[in-house]
Length: 102
Image (cartoon, rainbow, N blue to C red; front, side, top):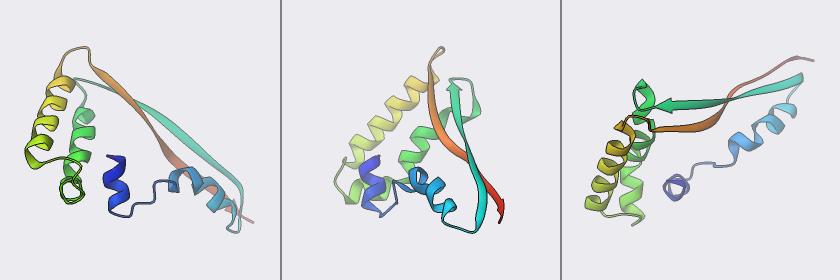
């Protein structure tokens, strides 16, 4: 998936640099909060990962990362795995970045 994001010109370092970038503005007391999201097989967000890959289908195919058939099989396998009782995954995200006017 990283190669697909790179292939469409996504800035993969933005989240890492965001705190520093906001510090370069006229804001002071800049802070950010990260969140760790845990998803279980019965949670509504269980399809997040395969849906994200599916949204990059054009890039995946254009970059030759997978064939259309291989991608379909991988997505089906992933969804089948995520649907199993007891399956979970975690991911983190930058949930908020804020500061106040100087």
